[in-house]
Image (cartoon, rainbow, N blue to C red; front, side, top):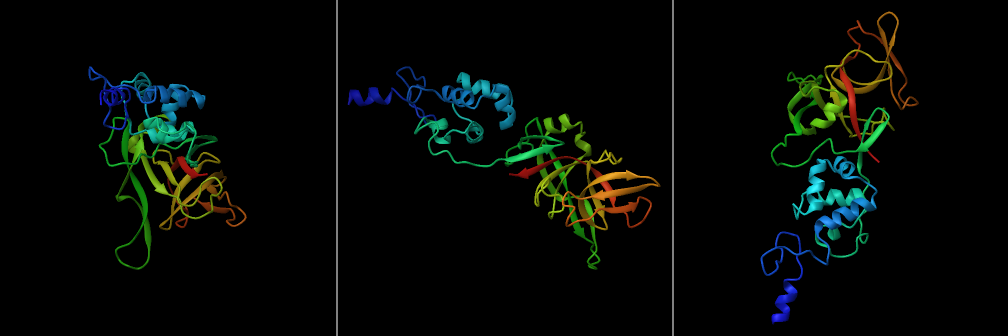
Length: 270
């Protein structure tokens, strides 16, 4: 019986009910603490603490705290495991092999210009907003109340999503000028896929040749590349130009699309 108690004091399972030693201090499971495992996983992936934090969506101090043992659990362990390509159960508890039973998940990628990054700009969860998060309104196509089938593109309509303030800062977008929308159709594929969330800078409505813009075109939300032309005209260009030919409008024409803002960010599902 004494041996059993001694063995019980020799390990801790770091999932909320740790075993403790004789003085009540947690002891690592299987000879490695959770901090040791996070550090080992990070080095396996060839990432610095800052790089891992950026990809997971937390500050470097959070990763450092985990590795130092300041915290024995984290809501981000599954994401850390995915980024580092290790077994999440092993990372959290020490059970199993580091690279055993790894679920291969293709992460969403956020695209900004020609750069790609793991998408942690959209933040899921019902917990209170963190200091580095903001709620952004959504643009939606909404039918007019008259019931004549006409639509308009309006902001919010009761819908909001959490978004990363650091991403807005890196893009130079003021939070008050930011909004989100959902891309529809395949006209902008492969750059922007059907169902992808996009970020819109409402403060940038001047046309910069080749940039992507969100448009309200007769009540339809459209995402297109724009190019200026002489005589106050504009080229409206789709990525999928074989199926969606280029369009030309005079900006003074009542049938011309209305620019909602420049698309500064979008997500894709690879």
